[in-house]
Length: 344
Image 1 (cartoon, rainbow, N blue to C red):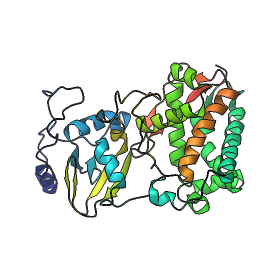
Image 2 (cartoon, helix red, strand yellow):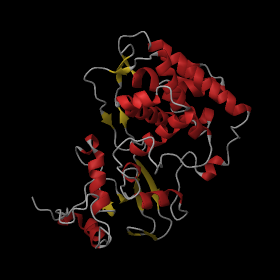
Image 3 (cartoon, one colour):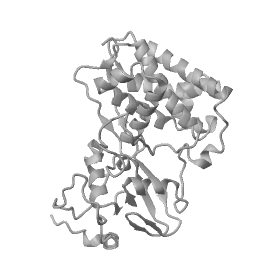
Image 4 (tube, rainbow, N blue to C red):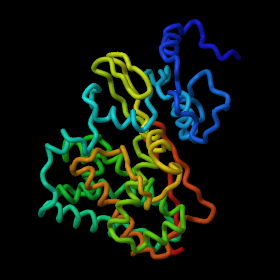
């Protein structure tokens, strides 16, 4: 089969012609191999099989096609950290809702006072109740039995809504109307928590380091999980006018896919980017903005109290024999299940 684009799709040929240099001078593949065969056609995160290992696709895009047009996404694609991080806050791009961005933070109350203390108490209580419910089981699925319930349960308790009613609202996509746009993004927090617990429990050294860790170390591990395995892999934006990026020029009015998952593993920004390392000296994540808002605070609190509750209720908690988390999803991504032995 020829590598040339089909002549019946002539509009896409113009996109390739507009990008004569896919890899700017001075930056080649991350492993330094410059004589590697270069692909003629960029891979897509939506192509068959990519969901099993999107990071392989992301690597090729960063190295060979840092700015390209993806016919499957129907969007231009940015995959390098510098380009993605800039586009998330650049006024030349339209902005969807990302909890923690400045416009979002300005609309929320201060959580450092009594409200913050109550939020901590509610999150801690909910995590411990859920952990104790599974502590005596021979086997449990932390995704179905814990991660699925903690974010919704925390919100339900915080706003005084009966737990069963809150879950019905979540399933009916009405959570945002009840608790606000940020905190209503419960599914993202579920996936982020599942990814975090998978990263910790998959490595006995991390279990040992975080079992009785202070909140500061848990917070660093949480940030590292958001970087390495973000729950939101792709964010869509549109250019307000022509935009010059570090990888090329985007036309005005263009749909743009920002690959958060690719940016988080860019070796130009992070050393040894595929490794989960809470103690790294170059931390960072793009799932949430840097401002304060309930969703950002809640997600971090849920990670902290989830780990503390699980290890206190189940000191010998470990993954089930032979189990390895299977990650699923393209736009959002997380382990499908997390089978554990509560009693070791």
